[in-house]
Image 1 (spheres, rainbow, N blue to C red):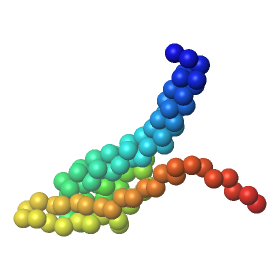
Image 2 (tube, rainbow, N blue to C red; image 1 turned 90 degrees about the vertical axis):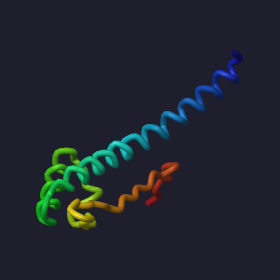
Image 3 (cartoon, rainbow, N blue to C red; image 1 turned 135 degrees about the vertical axis):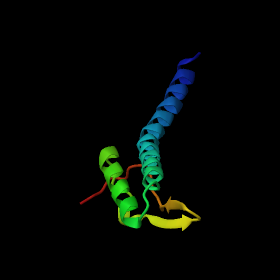
Image 4 (spheres, rainbow, N blue to C red; image 1 turned 60 degrees about the vertical axis):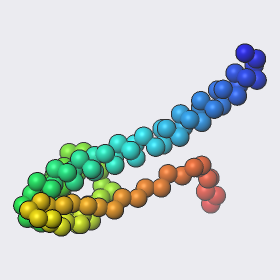
Amino acid sequence: MTFLGMLFLAVVVGSVMIVGAQVFPTYVEYRAILKAAKKASEGATVAQVREIFQRASEVDDFTSVKPNDLEITKKGDQVVVSFAYQREIPSSARPTWS
């Protein structure tokens, strides 16, 4: 492999690693929120659901979705917990000039 080929490969691998380093924490947070919502659906009342979710959010240390952001409904005798989650990951860091 030539020097230019190795340099190109290093740039591609480096770019993938940078994107992965930005996306991975967001994915982990989303999975923690899903787990907390699933656990919260075990509650019988709205207050219990919000309390269970709050405790799970403190354990998993996320603040993107708060207990008041939950949409709690009942289908038959099952509690359904849903939420809206949006996170934007910047594609490049722009310097801020003062």
